[in-house]
Image (cartoon, rainbow, N blue to C red; front, side):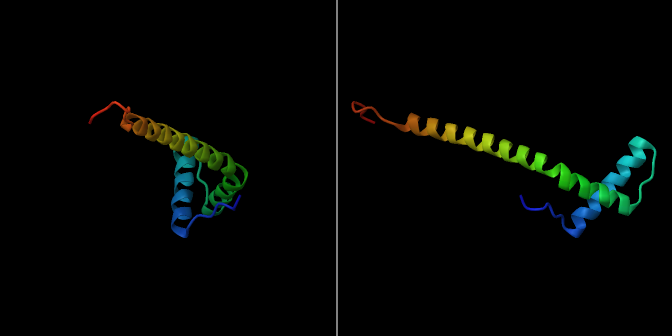
Length: 84
């Protein structure tokens, strides 16, 4: 799997959210650098789990759509004695 890379803007927004989480939920302040390290840790160590879950969700959605599509085609079929 390719390394998860965020744009500069995405990374800044995520780091800000990490800092806000620490302030709101843990009553602690965390600097930009530690927040970036935490983000890099999660991206490296746990990111694959989220990525794989996303693939599984996409596969399930695609499978559902294909089943719906197959059913729609079946409903369009005509019997040899249909005169429509």
